[in-house]
Amino acid sequence: MTRRNNMIIYKTESEIAQMRDAALLVSKTLTEVAKVLQPGMTTLQINTLCADFIKGKQAISSFLNYRGYPFTICASVNDVVVHGFPNDTPLKNGDIVSIDMGVILNGWHGDHAYTFVLGEVSADVLNLVKVTKESLYKGIEKATINNRIGDISYAIQEHTEIKNGYGVVRELVGHGLGRSLHEDPQMPNYGKRGTGPKLKENLVLAIEPMINMGTKDVYTEDDGWTVRTRDGKPSVHFEHDVCVKRNKALILSDYSIIEAAEKANTNLNSAYY
Ligand code: MF3
Ligand code: CO
Image 1 (cartoon, rainbow, N blue to C red):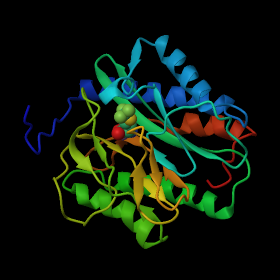
Image 2 (tube, rainbow, N blue to C red):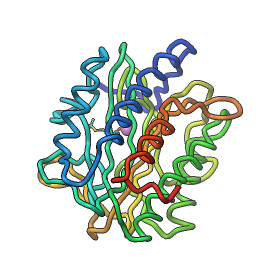
Image 3 (cartoon, helix red, strand yellow):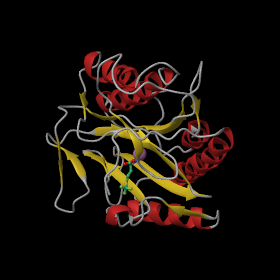
């Protein structure tokens, strides 16, 4: 099937309310992860926890079987940028792990991610986590009508690459979100101000900076999914589902519940925010 280049689908208010439910279900699932995450746990155990949690909520995984993806979550540890397969290697003190998850609830996708820090990490790694999360919000600040995609892209790139010298992954981008996991437009984390599609009210975007401590270069493993940094240095990934509005973007997903659980979990390091 051929597909037009810019088939952007705007949502109605009632559709956005349903998308918020989907996004919030992901936030609630990531909150369950934040409550129990600790060294010794495996990412396969986290996958099972997440799969079980949504089962009771009339939702199904967006990721499982998507283009053959074999799990409910992506679990990306240290130099894994995104799309890491959950595995049976116990997590250890000093690891950083991005948990990315998507659900379909009443036909609408929620898709977001959070990077957790286990215990003690270097100040460098903690700063990478901090700056990447900040860059997500700097991008979101630009998600208002009459701005362009490139304004969001540039805000993320400016904070991470230009101001902090980190590598912005080029091969992978954020995306529109709705009845499909990946809708137009593409949402790169690098770009020029004033370029790209103009933002109109009720466009829903998954904005997801993937930021490397070292260079921007990545490669995909032979499993066809796992993306790693070329230089072996760590990478951080945060993702929010965001609705474009007139004065201030509406964030459909919710980090506040994840962060509260993270703060209450002494095995997790949240000293950076
Ligand atoms: N957040 C990622 C994305 O939007 C997760 C996709 S994983 C996949 O691309 F398995 F669904 F592909
Ligand atoms: Co996404």
